[in-house]
Amino acid sequence: QVQLVESGGGLVQAGGSLRLSCTASGNIGSINAMNWYRQAPGKQRDLVAVIISGGSTDYADSVKGRFTISRDNAKNTVYLQMNSLKPEDTAVYYCHLVSTTAWGRRNYWGQGTQVTVSS
Image 1 (tube, rainbow, N blue to C red):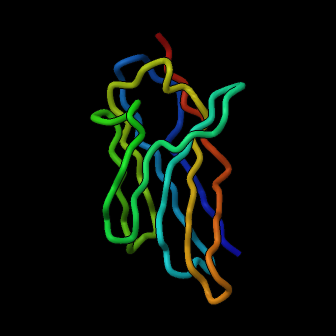
Image 2: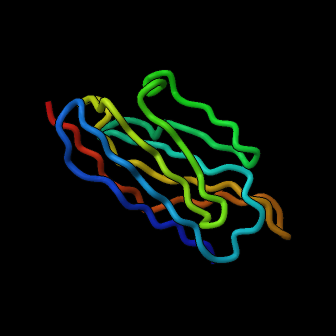
């Protein structure tokens, strides 16, 4: 059983910063990628940032230059440093893990953490 535990969400004023964390535990297998998604009320869940096993990263255009994804392999933890936050960044942020196990590729989701940016 794999568990993803997120933390770091909260309420912040526009222009402020937050740092999200997500730690994976259990029978993870070999991690292919750890990602962050977000979902605003009434909208679909969108990919925010990706970090693959080799360390390469990619970002949604809306967060480039403001958000940074990083990973601590020893801790199976992924971080999302969010700077210069805007009200439109308000959403529930979800951690997503893709891994390869003896039974094939697997996807796992965290429970989500609320980020609210006030204007």
